[in-house]
Length: 153
Image 1 (tube, helix red, strand yellow):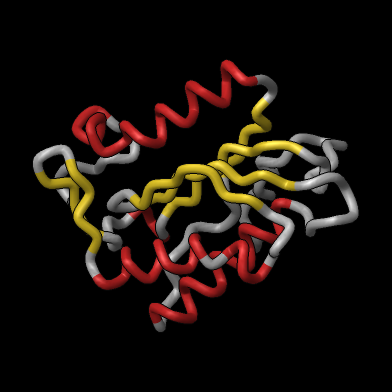
Image 2 (cartoon, rainbow, N blue to C red):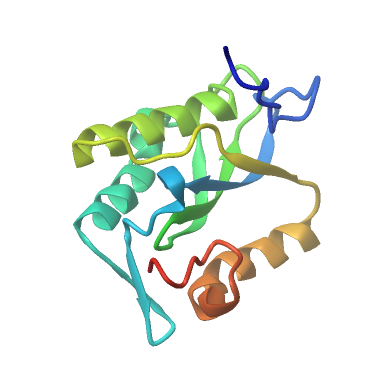
């Protein structure tokens, strides 16, 4: 007997191919700390973390119209800001992130990710500035992060 249906994290009726900036969080499968560790407030990537970092950076090679803003690979998740150009010039956000997740898992030789991802449509310059700062300072806040299962990292 199948379990309860999973609710989509996407906004109903929102066009995820719409031009704009999106704050994205992608979590590791079972939120396991497989990408490295935060040491002295600095993220230290392991082999799998470096693969994830390379695959995120390669998004623009696969989708030349997409732009990337700051991103950070954390022990068990990735935060980044993705810019989509006007509609019709890039695939929708779920296709971009799905491609990244597939590429990273293939390169690592094993499944890495939880199903789906979290996104937030960035609505103005103030929010963009705050999210850029959040991404840059994420390792400094790791000890207080809700994604930090401290006993596993």
